Length: 183
Image 1 (cartoon, rainbow, N blue to C red):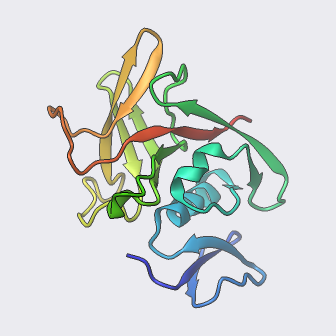
Image 2: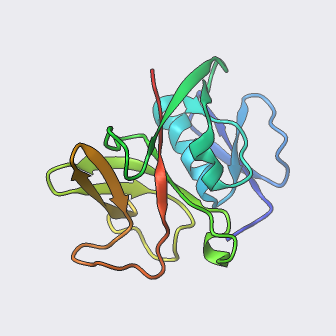
């Protein structure tokens, strides 16, 4: 769903608003395009971590950001990244899981981003909150949209977008890594 509407938040009250222009006026802060994954990830960070990140051309570009910012003061906040398959740090609550873009596939043309809301290392499950991944209700509507598989092999972590007990996901995307604040 792509609508020419823009999402804003008042950080003091937590209220959100949708407008037809992306011009921010006090006390409103720009979040993103309505119903898109990048805007959802930014809104989650703003509400839960008091962080934001700059504009990106597509969701896959988020993995290459080196700095975010304090959502209230604008002070820079360094960001770290873990590359899927070689990561020594497992995903944690608040991390942004980034999917690769596939320009040949209209569903994955811009990649995707989701927020980690829970990690179960024992069961190898990472719960994600997101918008615009698919057109289905969230698996647990109060907590997460869906879960992806986490594997720990020889001290390295890999996320795979596979349902439980499955070995293939013909419509899923390829996770490239996860981004997080380092302080």
